[in-house]
Image 1 (cartoon, rainbow, N blue to C red):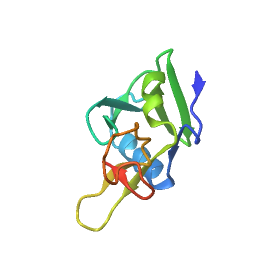
Image 2 (cartoon, rainbow, N blue to C red):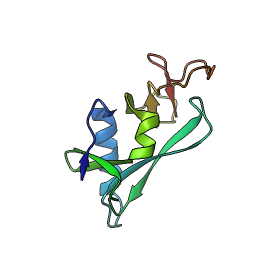
Image 3 (cartoon, rainbow, N blue to C red):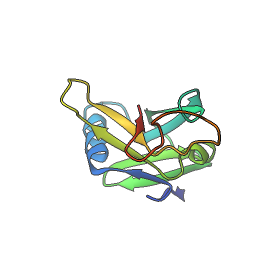
Image 4 (cartoon, one colour):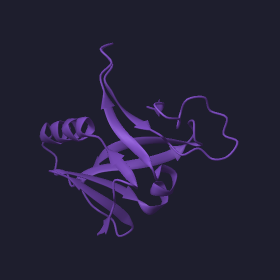
Length: 120
């Protein structure tokens, strides 16, 4: 198992707490939370998370207490230096956000990837 560091992908305490709560509320056999990328979005990619029941050979894994965050080596190339946070702005729509997403040159997206900005 390859180690995913906080420099690769930071996960805030609020995000870790919410992920642990979500894992605790399922009866599925969960190995961890897989972070994935798909084409589209501010940085040329959109990011999301899902439960996973296994770690693959090309995965990087970070353990935050009882929560494992799992990212494959291709996806981490799009996320290196980013942060996953959980925010509740009081508008009834709490969400996980990906902050400080590295932007490819010429992407032209306004706030995504900038300090304090985020993609959700």
